[in-house]
Length: 449
Ligand SMILES: [Zn+2]
Image (cartoon, rainbow, N blue to C red):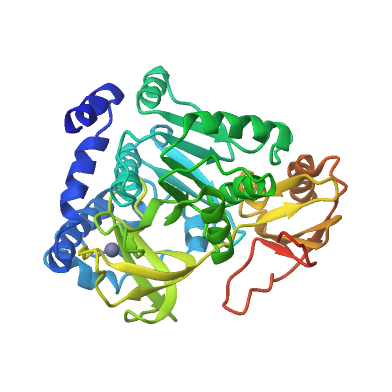
């Protein structure tokens, strides 16, 4: 199998296999060896950031002064908040790299305020290798198992070689959202997909939590039990216990959860013993409350340092997600730190009177097109099934055009659904009891909510 993987690297021009081989060894390092590895990577990153990234030049000590324990000095560096990220996006880019050669990701994460991040090629490749470790090694399948993906977009910009690689590796991707209407596909189309997937008999099913849930609901409603993979992998969106149970019943397989962020990829993956291990070779995770790093066992904001994205270094990035570090070692034998009780955005589906349903994450992304200076924060509030209020906090450059643009971007999602849209301007958007800002809030009882 190793030879096949090496050939794939050669064909694709990426170093996925190289990183994947390294990661398969490093997962068995002791906690102290992992810390030492993080320290070395952090030292290199801080020195690089000082030399090449304007923002870090202004906050980091002089190059060369970071000599011994970089991890110790990390906690003294300022947090990189989402707000700061929005304001200083240009200053956070590596001056030596062309922005055109990096991938631009825009996401509102859990807060409704959009941030933009550039990801360089090396970080993208490393992400793939990390995903593969969590996706194959830890779920008891392998690199060449038949795989089906459910996603919300079809933007397939891969070249012919990539498509060939996917064909060789037996990967099938299904987009569950209609490109034109931007809502979940009708059941007739989903049925065609399901029929095809029954003939494929995939060993792994993977997708966003909301997509998996959508398919699981269909399978249960229609009593379809012929799709029986070895594992289901839920990524990118937090998975509620209710959704996990539903998906496991529908596919007759265990669901492995992954915690990831669009800004930097898969941060933690579930091991065979059910614990979420942090991918410590790439990420330093701190839990911060009231500006201080708290001990394992205590809840706080998940703060991430990405050790592999030199093109746009995220150092002490505040995710606004909440979590707790586990002080115990996992019984699987891996000493990669364990993250427990991650509280982030829940799976959000907007139901409409016409029966169409729209994934809230779809709308979430369009706010990337409106500058932060015009609209600072957004929340969708649905007081009844036929009404949707778009709550907005104006930025200092807000104009009437910004409001019209926001409305015109959202309208197509709800065309002919019987939902009436309106805008509401607020000074603040209230948070939940735990301090989270929910992007989508349902104000009525729905049976399938
Ligand atoms: Zn484990």
